[in-house]
Image 1: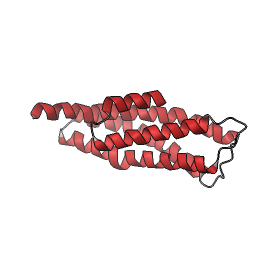
Image 2 (image 1 turned 90 degrees about the horizontal axis):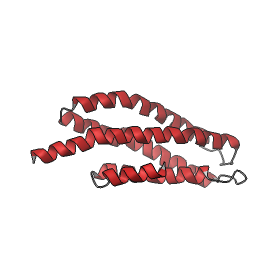
Image 3 (image 1 turned 135 degrees about the vertical axis):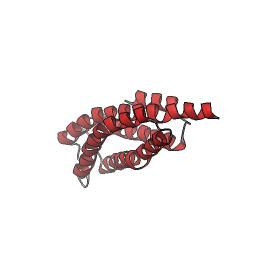
Image 4 (image 1 turned 180 degrees about the vertical axis):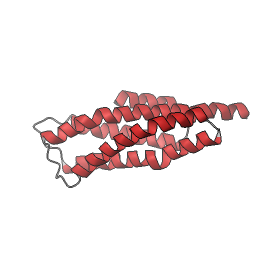
Length: 157
């Protein structure tokens, strides 16, 4: 998951400041996730680390919904990109479903005390593949709704 995060930064880094910041937040989220998942079963997950992960998780999904997706959709509308808007319409429901799982995880962890229970590790292990799926869907949206428009804008210049 961390490697695919790096690949996305290499492909789209510098394209747009908002996307750059968001991809950086993704990278930090993945590092925090790995830090929790890689905790030995005998060690307790500290409340501070869990809180830090949850904070990054909520910030990341919020930025996606309230900043990045809105920007990408506006850009597609500006370029009258029907194909991109149709793709977004197909992808957004799955992203929203994954967001609900992520927010539910955050709610369950809120005030948990951070004990390294098997339930927490199970929850994290379920969340990981969903986050990976979300990242791939987001990369697709960036590719279709942003990069294609950058090429169009350059052609018009």
